Length: 324
Length: 248
Image 1 (cartoon, rainbow over the protein chains, first blue to last red):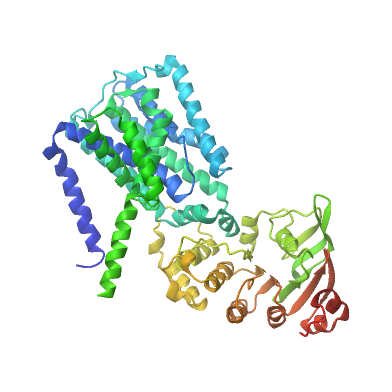
Image 2 (cartoon, rainbow over the protein chains, first blue to last red; image 1 turned 60 degrees about the vertical axis):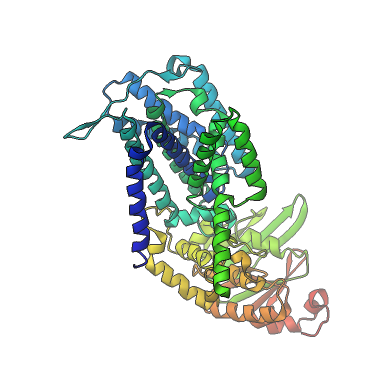
C-alpha cells in the first residue's frame, strides 16, 4: 500500500461509517450526532483563530447567531426560498458582520482582542434581545418550516432526521474541508507565523493586520454557515440559544479538551463533551458543573488536550520500539 | 550611489538625545560594521533604519528612496531584511518551516489560499537547499525551540538571508555565542552575504575585523570615525574611547 493511498483508505472507511451510522443508531442518536457535528465545526472555526492565529475569541457566537437569525428570517418571511439560498444567506450575513468588525479586531491582540470580541458578542446579544420586532426578543424566531431540497429528479425532505443528518454532514463536511485546506496553504503558514511571532511576519513583508482581518472574515463566515444549519436543525433561533456568552465559550472548551495545537483536536473535544453530556444527563441536570470540572482538569493537567495523551502514547511506543 | 544613507539623523527618547546628526553611508556590496561602547546609540540607529523607530529629524535613504517613515513590511518588499539581537524565529516550528516562510515571503506569496504549501515543489527544494547552506538540514524537522543556541542563531540569520535581500541588517549576530560557535557563524555570514550589502552591529572585535569592509564608530550618538578596519585599528582616538588600548 503506497503512502498516498493509505490515508485515502481511512477516508473511505470513515465515509462509509458516516453514511451507515444513522441507519444503525436510530433517530435520537442521529440527532445527537448532528448536535455534535454542529459543535465540532463551530469549534473548528474558533480554533482557526485560537489555535492557528493565536487569537482567543470570547464572542464567536455573534457569527453563529447572526447566521442562525438570517436563516430563520429568510425561512419565515420568504416561503419557498430554496434551502441552498438559506444556507447562503446565513453565510452572507456572518460575512458582512465579520467584514464590519474585522478592521477593528485586526488591530489588537491578546487580552484586548479577547475583550473586544467579548464586547461585540454581547452587543450582538443585546441588539437581538431588544430588537423584538425582527428577532422576537427572548422568545426568538420559531415556527418556520423547512423546505425540501430540489434535486431536479426528486425532492429530498429535510425534516426527516436521517436526511437532515446527510444534509448537515455534507455542508459541515465542506466547511471542515475548506478550513483544513486553508491551514495547509501558504496563507496558512502566514497565520501560524502570526501566532508564533507577529513581529517577524511583519519583517518578512506581510501586513499582519490584513492577514488577521482575512482569517477573521473566513472564520466568521464559516461560523455563519454553522448557524444556518443550527436554525434548520432546531427550528428555533433565540438569544439564549445562539448568542449568549456560553455559546461563545463552549467551542473554547471543546478546543482545550480536544487539543488546541492540532486541526482535529476540537472535533475530538466536541465529541468528548457531547458523550459526557449524554451520559451525565441520565443521572443529573448539573451538566455545566461536570463540564466545568473537566475543563479545569484539562487546563491544569493536560495542556495539550486529549490529543496530547495520544501523542505521548505514540511517542512512548516509538521510543520503546527504537530501544528494542 | 550609496545603497544606504542617513542624512542628519536625530533621535531622542523623551528629551534624552540618542542620535545626533548621524550621517551613515553604506556602499553597495560592502559589509559595514557599526561599533561603539554601550549606550552609543547603535541599536537605536539600527531601529531607525529598519523602520521600528521614527527619527526626530533627518532622512534615511535606501537605494535612493526616502524610507524614513516606511513600515517594516514595505522595507522588506524594497529589499531590506533584518535579523534580531534576541532570537526571533518561529520557535514552535521547524527550521524547514521557518526558512520556508522566508522563501515564500521572498516570492511575494501572501494571500495564496488555493494551493497546498507542501505541494509547491520548487519552494520545498529551495528551502532544503538553503537549509544545507545553513548546515541545518540534519535538524530539518525538529522544533526550533529544541535546537542549540548556536543553531538558533544560524536560523535567525538564515531567515534574514533566505529572502535574498539587497541589504542585510544584522543586530549582534554572534551575541552570547561560544568561541567555536562565533567562528562558525562568521564563516556562515561571510559565505551567505558574499556580494551583498550588509550592515552589522557587533560587540565582538574579532568578528568585526574579520567580516567588515568598512567600520563606523558611534560614540555618544555621533559618528566618531569611519574607515577601513586598518584605519580604525590605527586610529588613536578610537583606541582611547572604545578599544580601550586592548591589543587588537
